[in-house]
Image (cartoon, rainbow, N blue to C red; front, top):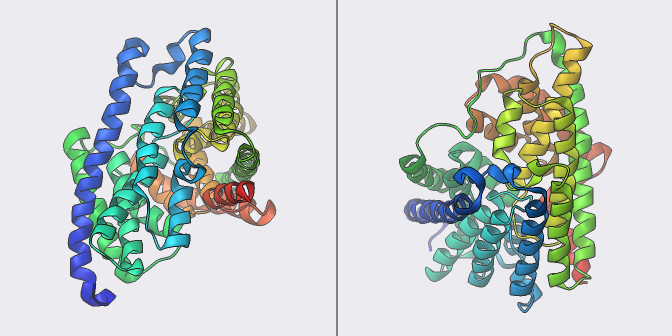
Length: 424
């Protein structure tokens, strides 16, 4: 292909094509998962793992981990590499040339992991599938590495936009978290890919944001010091998340995959006994936290056990996403701190739901080291512009705490480094 400015119109057309293809793929992935979940969960509700009995809360994730282990054990280690960390690895090592086999493993493994109630999200599989689809299209057309990188970013943006109805967050995430660079010329194709994928999502699921909540806002400027404190506290939680995930991933590389995946399922099952909310993506629990309908004890319990179930499970090799669990951990931690704030200053503090929303953004910023992506995600997931300026303070506090105080890397780089270390 020609030099970048001359190639821009062609890349733009390819971006629209990729957005449509990936948007359809994301709808298919979501449909497969939710149809199977609705078929066996009480009330035909894909989120209703909480209604399962204690025995099934253990049996289901353990059986899912064992099934994944047996099915994927015979594959080479490299073929089991999935998720955003794998996308970043391919961008670093091969200019964005991604293998089809890993994408197939991600689709099947990610779907099975979510259905089995593991503490994972669907955005990790979405990012991998979007990036791989765009990469394979680019490879078939013989694109150069520079243009292929842009197309991979288009795939990432389209996947996030098509999965969550968040086009702007998809663009920012692709640039800030995956490519880790901003290119003025690269923005146009990435934006077009996100727009076309979002159009498909809205055609099927409508225009409502993922979380429906009141228009919460900061009650008083005197709360800003407490918002800062909440950001720092959530930064500590995000640092623990990164550190424990890296530790488990490093240990998993020295264990047969069937055993590590089974152990990951056991970890989820053990955590689900006292806290069934850890199972699945957990958006129903996020909604309750945003509405202020959960007690302090419940929020604290969810924060602890969701963090353990996610870091141990994904660290040991369960092929699911991290961002969905991050949102629940942040919402639970923020909501708990909001209740504490109301005790400290009754009648003056904002609602627990407001601080749950603050906690979500802070957790994403502290874990991904991507405060702008976190803020745009919060805006689009809730449709609440009032979160932006107090959220900026909390997000930067969490980001600085994780990066500068605890010296943590962004979560996907930490996970990639741990996996590489375990293979050496």
